[in-house]
Length: 353
Image 1: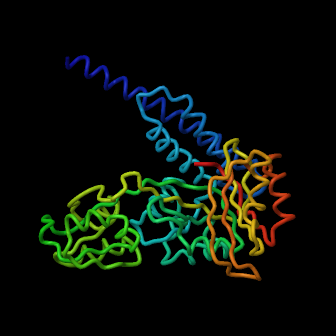
Image 2: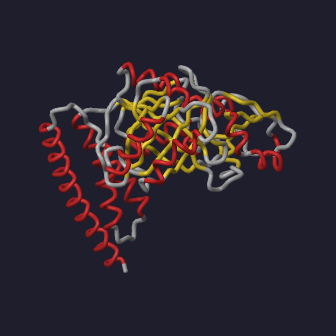
């Protein structure tokens, strides 16, 4: 038995050495690719999406697709950093779901730029302080993030990617006894997403809304008999005990994040396009706007209305459709819409998550 175990360990050592050699060769090729580029763009979301799609298609196990994706995200991130370490702005502080989404998309080998607001993320990218930005745009339980939608309308940035992050909330505290908790901190949306659990388990405690769950975790780490609703990562960062995990009311709770940049993204063969459109307030106006999608067999996956912040329109509509804006059917639909709309802004085409 011991002899067999030693042999298996030797096999693993030999495989690890081969993997190391292959990783070094991959990194060297990635460096050569970087030298041949002439546009200065390091991050190619369409290319990375294609690489991961092929790997997942060829995965025969026993590692899950999620494990393969995590491993190769790290490999790509470290190879990318040989060209340049990307700076990515996100809603901070450290320990937020925005940071988790950022790492999921770009890997660990980046320069994270945590900010105090969604506005700052947009400003960081537009001013060149950060190469990219990550902002939440909607939650499956609570709906759209209105501030992100408003800034997409007024700021001159493009969407180059999306991240769908499963959101699991943890009750964290320095205390180890749930019955001792008198106050709980969390972002307002997280308090709403955990409403039923709070009513059933902590009905009489004080609930305090804060700027972010990570800020709530920081406060809970310094105050006796308090708790926070935050991520498992926040528990590690602020050295808190996990009193209860997965306390969200909806077990399929997830948040969609957008990756912001100043660059256009080429087709990846599985894309999505986001637009903002406005029309006069008249009967049948909305139906007239979306009809070209059906006529050209373009699937519309999202329609969200917001009060207009600029110009003469009363409402604008945020629309997501399947397909890249350069695709013949999508282009035809957008051309018709542009001729009928009071306002049309193409936010970008990007790989569909």
